[in-house]
Amino acid sequence: MKLSTSTNIVSERLGRPNLSLEKTLRLASQAGFQRFDLNFYDWIRPDSPFCSEGWERWTFEAIEIAAELQVEFGQCHAHTYSFLDPAISEEERAHQEMLVRRSLKCCSLLGSGVCVLHPDTSRDPDRPAKQSKADNLEYFKRLMDEAARLNLELALENMCDYSIAPKRKFFVTPEEIVDFVDAFGDDRLGVCWDFEHGDIQEIDQPAALRLFGPRLKATHVSDTVSKTYEPLMHIMPFFGFTDWPAIMPVLREIGYKGDFSFEAHNFAKRLPDGLLPQALRFSYEIGRYLMSL
Image (tube, rainbow, N blue to C red; front, side, top):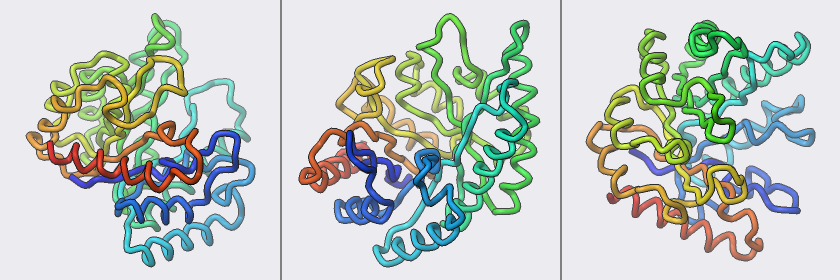
C-alpha cells in the first residue's frame, strides 16, 4: 500500500485562483508526498489547460515536473459525467465522452495503472436498480476496450445517496458493488472505496473491505463532520468521525497493494497561502501515521 494524495489537496483556494498543477506538485512534494492522483474531474473549467488544444503539452509538462521532483503518479481520477441522463443532447454527450477518453489517455501518459470513474444511476422509475446494472455493464465494457489499449485498469467509486433519501443511487452498498464487479467478469475492473461515502452511509467499512478483497483497486481517503454540508466534508482523517483504527488493519489483512490516496480538498481551502507548507506537512504526517496502523 502506498501513501498518495489527489492533486486537489491544496489547489482549490477559497475566493482566489486555483493553484497551478506545478505549484501543487512542488508544495506537496516538499511536504513529503511522493505519489499523486491527478484528478481530471477538477480540471473541467473554461480556463483549464486540460480542456484546451494544449492538453497534451500540459500533460507532458506534468511528466517533466514529476521527473524533476522525483515523484510519480499512481491512481488517477478520470473525468466523469451522468452518462445515463436521457436529457443530455447528443452533442453534449460527444463532448463529455471526448473528455472521458482524453483523461484516460492522460492517465496512461502519466504512468498511472488505475483510473477511477463514477458509475451512474438509471432514471427508469420502475426498475432503476436492474436497469442501472445493465446500463453500467454496457457502458464500462465499451470503456474497458479503450482502457485496455492504454494498459489501464478501471476502478468504480462507491456512491453516496444519503442526501436524496428515500431515493437511492446505484453502486452504494457493498453487496451491490460486488455483484456488479463479478457480473462484469473482467479483473481489470474493480472498486475504488471512498471512506467518507462509506461513513456517511453508515456502512460497516471493515466488513466491506473484507467483502471486496482483491476487487479493491483504489481508495479515496477523507473524513467529514457532516452528511450533507459540503464545506464540512472532504477533510483530513481524525477531523471527522470515521473509525480509522478499525479500518486500517483490514487493508493489510486483505493484502491491499494499491494507493491510500487523500481526497481532502476542503482541509486547507480556507488557509492563507503562507500556511500551506505546514498544512501539507501535517497532512503527510497524518498519512504516515495511518499507514503505521
